[in-house]
View (cartoon, rainbow, N blue to C red):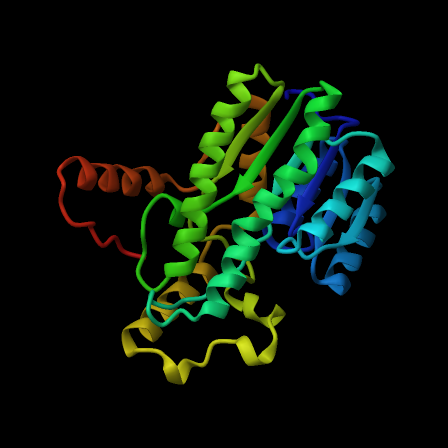
Length: 280
């Protein structure tokens, strides 16, 4: 989809971080925007900011873990702009825990947003997008953690591996049907966002208690926090996304070292050896 001007983008998790950066990049291309986020206050501020820059933008408070919310988002987007050409399934959260320390509430929360948030959007948006017959593109935000397995990130790893394989299968499904809708999967490494504070959106009773975690998990979690704080700016990721959409490139790897990490993992599999622990 080389021409983005006057086309419509829907971005979940669009109020801040990578989602907000993609919104600004899409607006700079002349796209109309529908931003979805669970944080209504931040969403309103981002919508106002984009409007001040001349963007045609609609904000919709949305809990992507709830299909009814996502279906309502789709209805509002199509009603406002007639079609959706770029669907960016970007909303995401994380907890830093080993598999046995991860509670059922953790699993439900992470999978509900990171994975089911994507499947909900595909069911809500794709039938109409395909029915319109226009060019389109879907970008699903996974992570480098969807291509390699880091410690103390059990639920996050599983959710992001799920997004990667979902996106790969979706690519095949659309290609076999000759659809004009293409797919990319975004797999960034460390990006300077507030994902390390994503539990702020949870009920207080469900939030992680550091006192229940093993020292190794706490140490790994601290390393993850530092890596995120030293990560690349979201604007760099957004530029990569826009470029990939125009080039119809499937995998979007934002860090040079990501390719090396994936190669190590592939060699582990081919050689049937235990997974290599790569540095955070």
